Length: 245
Image (cartoon, helix red, strand yellow):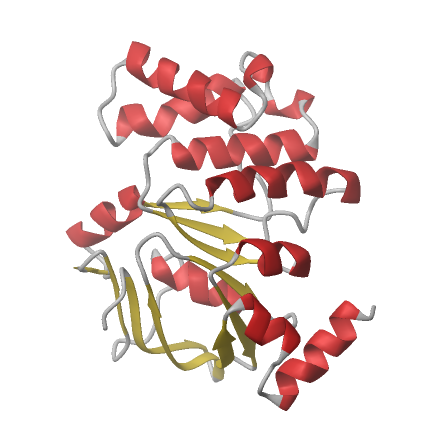
């Protein structure tokens, strides 16, 4: 069965180095998928390929909602429907928090200023920082900036949200506030693909967990399957090292 996100024969090479080896993956509409694995396993490369931030080998195919991901006109459609939150917040420092969130819906979706402002304020309230709307990003904590980044991605009303280790650059005490926002998103109907090293979050929120190593999908299962009864020795070794750390 073809998923809302369909990945077939995905190969990605950096020169002579193969970062992804023939990855096959189907993700259903509304599904929350967490991708775990050691550093350098291809997790971030995988999700960056979904909206072509990382070009992939020509024999590979990715479709999102039936639209093929490729350079050209299709790409604008895909990117309008796919929000992404990075490790670094990538906010515009010269714009207020409010203007950061308003910008893309006005430029890409054609929202009027009043409509964009209302949507931005609603989203900032939803992620718990409505009172920060008129500040500049530099005045906010890392956790607050990452919540602005999530609101900015949601402002485009995306069908898919990609998260690339969104808490890895945060101080430990700020991690929870960002994960709480992400937990509230899960189950709202938006399809989520989350690269994370937060195993508790993956266990609690994911519909499925994907374990990657060496550019390959080693194992896929429910959180209970992956964390309690992993089938592959490599999965067991990784989780043993991470969970007992």
